[in-house]
Length: 253
Image 1 (cartoon, rainbow, N blue to C red):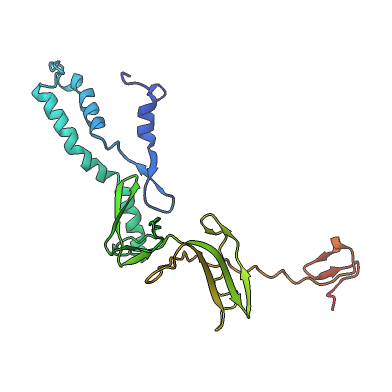
Image 2: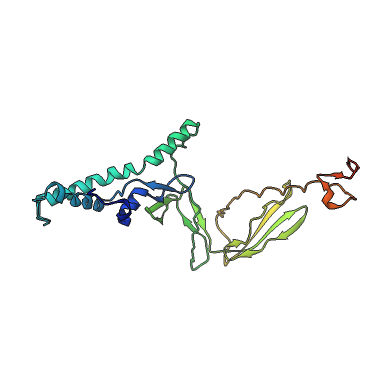
């Protein structure tokens, strides 16, 4: 037996055999990494085989033609191995397709942006359509464009109230707006209900005001408590509304 036994393998080899989970698509937010898809890893694996396949190659200089070929091979193999690591994603998509689940077609992402302006006269500022704004992500910067003209005002949200059944109910405000989700037109929306928005600023918004709302799903209503029957016997002899006695059972009315 000339090879190393399994308990003598180093941690890197065991990790490579066992695999590891990296961020990726899917319900768990991760995927297995089948291979280490980096050019440095490919070059290191090739260099580790030099002694066994070409022992007479002993010149590690970067000017050597063999070293240049190894570096080129690592650069070309990196995107191929990256596609190999996407095989679990492909398998997941095929399983979902078997169940009749299809991916949605690609579309432009949408985001709600907040512009802060401070003009000297307090007037509204025009943000023209196709105005670009960038956001940083782990994959790089994502550039967004506004799809229509909007006017940003230096006014701030001072009051917020819901009018329902002829009465006004003020909503608590925090530094970023309402401190909790709320029903904008009351629990039972009907004609006559309204949402009152109070702004504070040196000048009125002009010529129009653009508002943005974040809509969240209403929580499900609480389940009604299970009906219980009054029972005069001992609690340990009562089960699901039926009273058990020494001579039989009866249901209370």
